[in-house]
Image (cartoon, rainbow, N blue to C red; front, side):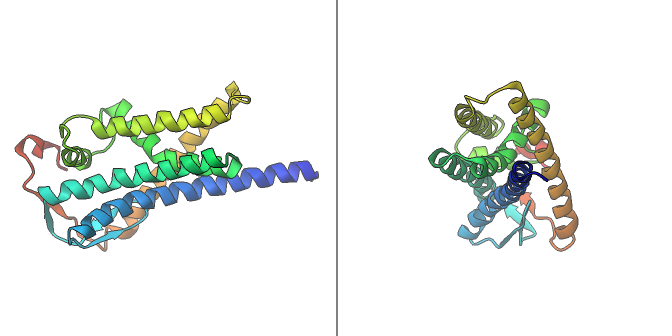
Length: 214
């Protein structure tokens, strides 16, 4: 193998590894955000890669809203840190980390555009209640949409001299592969941990939102 080809292969492999690791790391930061919000309120919680488990049989709505908000806060922080690192030192490694950090917001945004809400059950409604927004609205969906737009803009500005159709195609392909990896991780996480932790039921849910609870 020619040295230039070997170097290109090594760069590609490093990018893929960093991208996948960033997806996993950003997913854990999201779940850690949920868990930290629970711990602050004296509620036991175990964060895993793609889910947090509350160590209670039930949780009242007025506590759950803050736990629900913790996840989006964690995702926002992950994207902000990755973006700052990328802006300060733009390069292939930083690009991979930014792409991975943006993957979860992209997945939520795609779900929002296709199904009308970025998350199932009550998590987004509860988080919006904690923010003082309409729980039936789309405040959290819009936050993630803005994150995607800002992250995409930062990437496009850095890529402006190389922003061609092939680059956009690779970005879309990377997003599709990343979302598929995210789904696999979520399914695997549930299969591994759901057997060990009982489901925590949300109680005292406002009547207008009870129909959304699954």
